[in-house]
Length: 420
Ligand SMILES: Cc1cc2nc3c(=O)[nH]c(=O)nc-3n(C[C@H](O)[C@H](O)[C@H](O)COP(=O)(O)OP(=O)(O)OC[C@H]3O[C@@H](n4cnc5c(N)ncnc54)[C@H](O)[C@@H]3O)c2cc1C
Image (tube, rainbow, N blue to C red; front, side, top):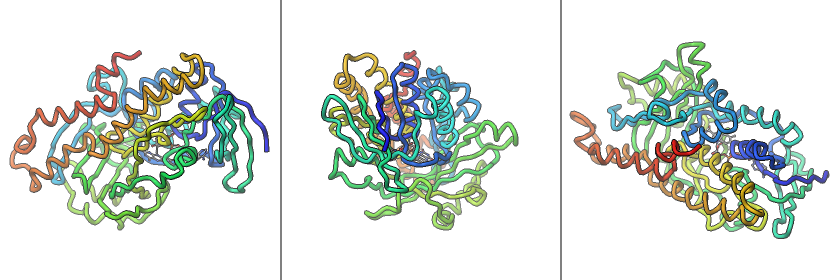
């Protein structure tokens, strides 16, 4: 076992952990990332970065890379299960933001962050095969022990000013801090995710959602390169169904299933602007993930350890907020560490800025966030609209739902454009 000393020990080299490492580098804070897996792979499918998180990534010098990899989302569009429009709104630059919304392959985003972290911090600062196992953060210093999960061997003992747990929805640190909490809370809905090359639909850079709370399709393009090379889009798709019960399927981001498990209920979703069953059929590997979150916590920081990203506030993937909120955490924590006199004061400021704010989003997402317009349409007009949506939902109500969620999640235009 080796002994290491670092100012910040970051447990978890996912999206939040690596962005925090880049923030530390920018602010001159010595840090080391400890990631559980032995070899990082470009895993996942589509993920969204809202303008407030793109602003932060731009501040880390990543904007041009992001724009060259992902798609600058131009529109968010909701439809009922008959393919009739409920609500369409411009997004990102098209909506007057100073920064784009970017839809991107999670693996490409992860590897972009990894490349920059290795270049800026040095490869020795990103230690894979190091899963945090236990820690003592109660005194003047924090101590953590890391293990190699494959061999079970303890591989490093680390002495740090602060341990930041960015170790995801199944956070080891959170489980040690809250031993009674148990597994994530199941929503009663399962997501099946995949990506395939598909002709552009709507604006060509639209993120579309159709259906209602118990059956939904979410489809959007995620690769600028594929579009430039083929004229078609690498298209991320998510099919979601209610699967009641207390016991969700295994929560593993890489669990592959046969499409017959979920394709049946979408068989009739063929519209003149999009053929959902054909897209599923074309759609490559299908990954299954139960939609889960956890209850907001009363406290994230204990002595010299704190939580960040999904470890702190895992939320339903509704409203495109998971990665964005992790990135917002990194900005807040780095500013607190540079601006406050000591670690306890920095953690108090970080929690004050981020805990309540993210708890509100977790709860808003349980109420379907902005997607509730689809559920309203289903409840008020299950057979569809004769003329248009306004028979069922007024324009003012639609506008209010959209504006309220943006305000809650911190990406109303005035909130983003006011920040430098
Ligand atoms: C493999 C994978 C695929 C995903 N695919 C998608 C997707 O397609 N779409 C989407 O919207 N979201 C996806 N997510 C979730 C998404 O990345 C997060 O919701 C969001 O970006 C918040 O980031 P995070 O850093 O908090 O968590 P994550 O990005 O989940 O990162 C957590 C990291 O911590 C590591 N870790 C776990 N336990 C320990 C430990 N004890 N010690 C050290 N490290 C540990 C994990 O290996 C992981 O790298 C995926 C996550 C993972 C891990």
